[in-house]
Length: 493
Ligand code: NAD
Image (cartoon, rainbow, N blue to C red):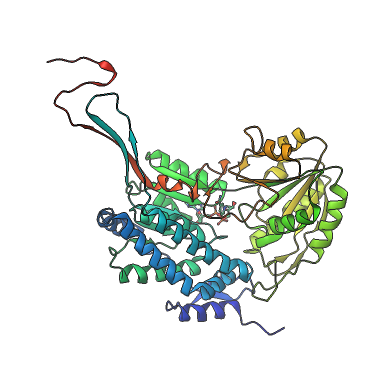
């Protein structure tokens, strides 16, 4: 195999190519520990908020389709830089190259969606009970939107929010994860360039790199009507409370604990592929990663034998190498958290296959056959551990799927129509995403994305998720000469 350059040096070279170089001295790359370029923390967050507020005052009056044209141009710029940006995502997060490029593609997709949406921010007309009156509902821009993003989708999460918020007439303030500021810097530099070329108001999108303190400043600031926060449940709890204390709005995309039910009629060939990608893909570091496999006892042994073979053959290593499917975990803390969870699993009587710490931040994905759904299984450990539970009747499988605090993604593998439809019914999966004959991860941008319970209840991306980024106004117009009151109330003076 050809020797790959040190990850930090390659990241620096990519930034040069992208026209936004940075000095060395940043965090270690998860790939090989070499220093990534250094993104300095934002010096003045207050001034950044003020700039976003000033830009909003102008941007809200720009016609929505013109706002859409900026987002379209940004999508074109991303398309031109898809490969170098995708490589940078892979280097900074440790995800395989195809997933890094896929993340940039996801940004391009949401730009296309938002561009179309810019001509479809539809209101309503409503029948008025009063004669010679019109009633309607109209959507107006909301204000500066703060976007706090997680490390595992370092740029797509911003794009899901920003592309929609921008066509809705909002300005944005982005606090990227302190673990992945380099890709944020590169994407934001590209956005700034396009915005200037389009003559957009200066400061329309602000990048404020920093740690959780910077996120907390955004959460507390009353100039920001909406805080969209993606990350862990403890982060969401802190942000939600700070935003609620000032009666602002929050849009929360928090932790998951996805389960897949494997029914007796499941296609096991398809199951092995769906499970391997769902549970081991992105080294278990997706919010929709499959963490629980609830398998019917009649197929469990056969499926596990095949899964163990598939897991043993997973290529693990430098995610830039061709054909690599499993890269490193993000850092040493993640490696320790995985080891601790597996120790607990064994102590609870679980049988663990794989899960070894190989070197650096590289681990082998683990299968953990568990005697029951313990507190450990109910927790999200952000690593490639798939807990396997057996069931004998369908109601038990659904009860297990639901019996966790999180509610993001779920799936069922079955060829039984009744089971599939029951899983999708009101008494089936309790998640924001429910899939049939596929895994739990890999969402498309056209649907609304998000989950229930501790996942936070927010919806982003497609469908009507745009409504969270606007304010709704009910408008009543009297075009007659009398003043009839609603509900027949009389008040003659
Ligand atoms: P994290 O919670 O550690 O950090 C996420 C972001 O929140 C970072 O930018 C961080 O600086 C900021 N932050 C942390 N504490 C804060 C506070 N008190 N106030 C304000 N900001 C704060 O999460 P992570 O390790 O980067 O990401 C992994 C987690 O994110 C997992 O739980 C995963 O399931 C979740 N996630 C959810 C989704 C989703 O759409 N539901 C998507 C991606 C990741």
